[in-house]
Length: 88
Length: 214
Image 1 (cartoon, rainbow over the protein chains, first blue to last red):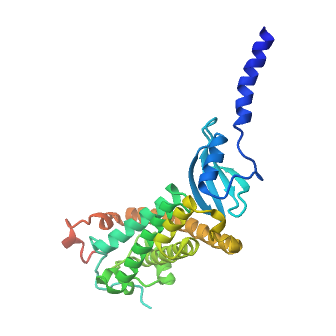
Image 2 (image 1 turned 90 degrees about the horizontal axis):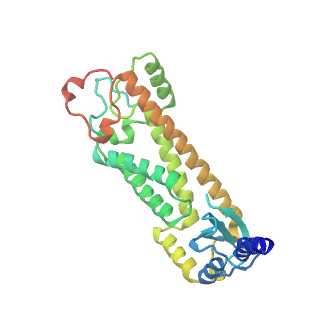
Image 3 (image 1 turned 180 degrees about the horizontal axis):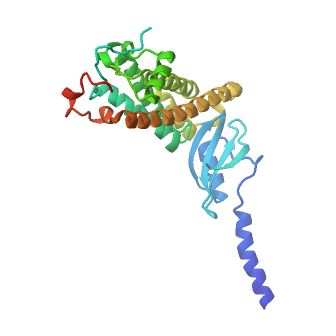
């Protein structure tokens, strides 16, 4: 009983986190604002804004799990994440 | 080249004219906002930069057509005179100048030159009109990014512009620190409030100040 409870608690803590993991470098998010907005929201990081920087699109979002702001740099031609930074 | 020094005993104005004051505090606000509060490349950063360009252009035009103490001829850049002024200050024998003193004048020209570099590189990176930045932002929000020209074809050039932009901006902050320190030190040594003429002026002792070495 105790073991089942421990597994259930662990699963409750870990699985949602795994499902909401942020995208990684190399992942495809899309080549337009709407697609990227949806993709990042699905990862638990609703977009707060887009900017162009150094020929890349910078998508700014806030991780709902940690409340930390992130910047995803996306290649506009391929929609691939090229860099990820915690927002300064 | 003259140093702008007056032998007739005139002093800087007790109240700088409105264009000098507005451009001075406006540019100070532009530098502060864009260096500290706004994010580089953001729409608000770009628009504040355009306000800075307008204020700088206004002040430069005023340097040609404004009142005597606002004109470039009243405070020509003269490094030797600037060193002489600093020596006079250390010796507590500051002399009167009808406009900015030679050290202040050098600071003004350096700040304007660096502001021109920062604004010029900013314009080169974001487009030649303030609306260009808005149009690009709208396109990012609504269009397929693969069809946009975001400058990725000349990434090295953009990187170089960004470097120059940031170095010049940091130099401005350093010079602003020196400027504020200089105003405080000189004001203390001369026992005169140097900030007030740039804010509201002080007409209370105008008659007594005329002819008095400052």
